Image (cartoon, rainbow, N blue to C red):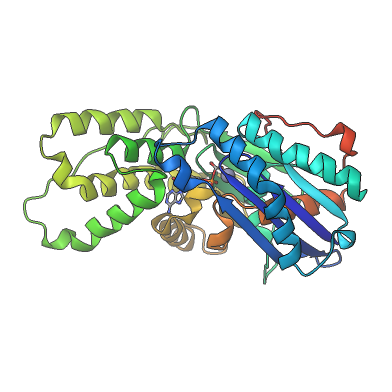
Length: 348
Ligand code: KG4
Ligand code: ZN
């Protein structure tokens, strides 16, 4: 089957076409187009919802058109159109949803509503060379959410832990803003941290910056990052030389985030006797997080299979929405165009 995916939950206007082999459930990406608004929002230090929605309205049809052309098919060949229903910014979501409503009506193709977080998770199922064994425990981390999810079969997702305040990506973004590093913060902080760790052997008299690891040893699978962010703020305020030590601050801050994320993921994987562990969401682009999780899985659960998505499917894209839509299509969970509705707070 052929599925067109459409994603507009935040600041990327994205469309993709994927093909699913229904027997093997293997997914092949035929096109994956993303029109990023990052350069527009950079000057404000974050996403401005109204600006984002206006940009989506301008870009959405050209982006869909390009996705279909690059896939070398026509709209007639499509079996379904999958679209992000939520969570996300309401006006951004609506621009994608209303476009899909019109296309679903005009092209007479059933639509599939996809949860954005589920989309990030199914990014792991694209172009897979090996079978996923269940149960799987997934750490899904982005600018809008941080969750530990249990996947008992290929279509059942249950949240077992979540952030009680800021998301992991938000923690990166807010810290970067605090230090005047720009938006989005994740890639910048990660780059600075690598710079510090590469040079640290040559730095004389450097003092470790001690930052908390909130909730690392509590009994739950939940997270909290706002205390860490505040601790960073207070530490910066006490240090007259912080501007000269930015890579060092980035390194210790990132260490605190990764320590908590990896430790809780392994704990959940052990508790739920996971056969697979997966990483997903924008923060899963982080090299150090990937490396540390890999090392921990190899050391503590050597029989567990670790999956990480290809870099192009980590931050927001529509291939992941089409992928999640394909699994819903297998279960016949489609919607008539008249019943489509966004839900900015939609839970998994
Ligand atoms: O999944 P995504 O594109 O959008 C949401 O669903 O929120 O994730 C964006 C988030 C941002 O907070 C960004 O700072 C973070 O992912 N991010 C990273 C990296 N690349 C993007 N965080 C850490 N390291 C990275 N390399
Ligand atoms: Zn996302």
